[in-house]
Structures are given as structure tokens and as C-alpha cells.
Length: 396
Image 1 (tube, rainbow, N blue to C red):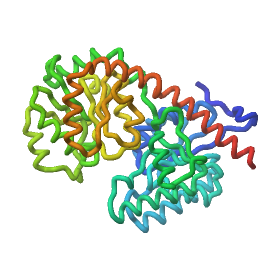
Image 2: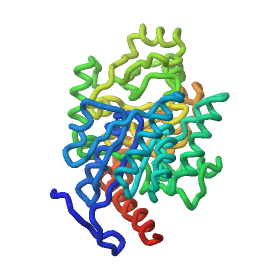
Image 3: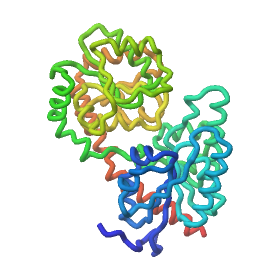
Image 4: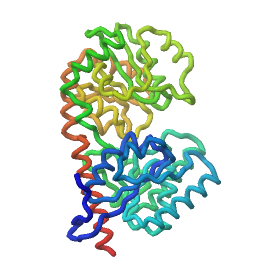
């Protein structure tokens, strides 16, 4: 598709609008934003991405999208903070973007300040969750302060889910008038051509054969970072208490600073029913191989793994936290359990085995297809970008 040189925006004809997406690390772009960036780039927008340097990101973005590496500190660094703010401000002043969007707390803090200083009139915070909710002590107050500053400097807040928006309003981080959820939420939706329900049986047979599972074995699955905040302690504890022949497959890497119960982790690693598998790029095949996905996290932005698994027909058990509760229908596509509660999780694991979980999987696939398809979400994102830029032009 040829890139349009001009387009109609709210009745105003203008040359292509320049927009910039800012995150801290390339992985965030790679995991969530590439489909919408490409969609915007062929529908009237000149798109730039800013994050720390990467040798592979430009290739993934393609020729239409610009990549400008700027290091943004992830932790506390006075020198790094000053350099990041100066670099972002200088770049924004030079490029004169019509819209600057930022995600993740540190990127949002520096970018919202820099964008305001540079005079960008549309500063959009794509809020993917609240990191401070999982913190304690002084760290919690610092993270919340960063959120407050980023929200105050933003002209609009784009929340990843309805439940996250409600928390932000209740915590007085932003007003209801400033916030919205695009369509049904999530950052990038689910690519239905990749997470293809029609290939479930084929993928299921392939992966089960590769991993040595029998077709009739009941397999619980987890996909993601293997760390405390993902509820891994509760998951391992709940599973090891089950007195049946089910199996547990965890797909993801064990983080160095995982804060897991070492005795529990060692016990699970020595249990023949538990399989730890490194992260796989063809994750859709692993979703199809398991019977139920479990996401017992303490906090999430949205929990995209739930709708990805659902798209290929795998129901879930999720914590009752903002994000995942927006990605399911309790009792139809998933069971919702109390976070940090091993007993609640263990009971749900037993319950779902005794339920028609295959029917729940079919309902999950329909739910994901109707509410979170990435193509429709990209269209909704495009419409919103046009609207908020158009509103600013009219006000001027």
C-alpha cells in the first residue's frame, strides 16, 4: 500500500502528520506496538519510534518507520535522567511532532516533560498499568509521583483497560474527562492470523509429541516471566498440592532477581510433572498444546497472554486484578481467583478440570475474535489519533 502524502482530518486537509512513540526498551515496541505503527504509517502518519538502541528494531519496523535511539534510564540515575530529558527535548524541538505518545513509567515521565517543554500540543500517555501498585515503602511513593507528573503533563490518557482507568481516576492521577479506553482495551490486541483457532488441533498434536505429552493428559500452562510478581510461588504451590495426574508447563525464562521461594522452585524443578521451557517465538503452538492457561499475577497492564491463548481456544484462570479481569468473562472463558491466594487458585484448578473446559475454550476464541482482533483495534487507534490531533488544530 502506498503511503499517502496527505489525508483528510476532521474536514481539514493537511500534509502527513508526524507522530512519535516513546518507550524505554525495544522489547516493548516489539511485543506490543509494531502492527499499529505499520498501520498508521500507511494511513496518513509519518511515524518515529524512540527507545534505547537496538541492532534489529529498524528491520522489524520496516523502511516507512523512523527509529531514533535515545537512552532512557529504567532506574534512578541523576546523570541519566538529565541526559534523557535534554536529548528528548532537543529531538522533539527539532522534529516538531504533531503528537507524541509514551508508555511505561520512566519513558512517560521524561517524555511528557520534554514534550511539554518542546511545545507539542498533543501529549498522549498510553498507560499500560501502574507499576507502583506492586511496590512498597519509598519506592511506591516515588513511582506514584512519576505517574502523577506524567499524567499532569499529558493532554490525554489512553488506558489499556477499563479497570486500570477506574483505578487511575480513584487514585486521583487524572480526571475522567482526560481518560479513555480505545475500543475494548489492550495495547495491540491479538493477531488472529497468527493465533489461529483453526490450527489448534494440529499445533496441539505437534507440541505434545515434541514435549512427550500424551494426547489425553491434562496440562496447565503458564506463559511469561518466571518471577514472584507473576504469582509463580502460588502457582507452583497450588499445583504441587494437586493429587492427580495433571502436568504443568511453564514457558518463559526464570529471571535472575526473581524473588521466588527457592525451596519451592527446586521442588518443582525436580518434579517430573513440571516442565520448565524457555520462551518460544512460536508461542501460539504452546497455547494450543495446553488445556488451561494460568495467570496468577499480582499486577498486569492488561495480560495479553490471556487473549492470545483464548484466540486459539484455551480458557484461563486469572487473578482478580486490573487488566486480566477485562480480558475474560468469568465462568464462560475463564475463572477469576483472588490474587496471592494459593487455596483459591488450587480450588479453581480442580474446578476447571471438572468443568466443560473445551466449551470454555471455544467461547474464549469467540470472545477474543469479537473484542480484541488487532486489525479492528488498529482502525480504532487510527480514528483516535485523527480525533485528538484534529481537536487540537480546531482549538488553535
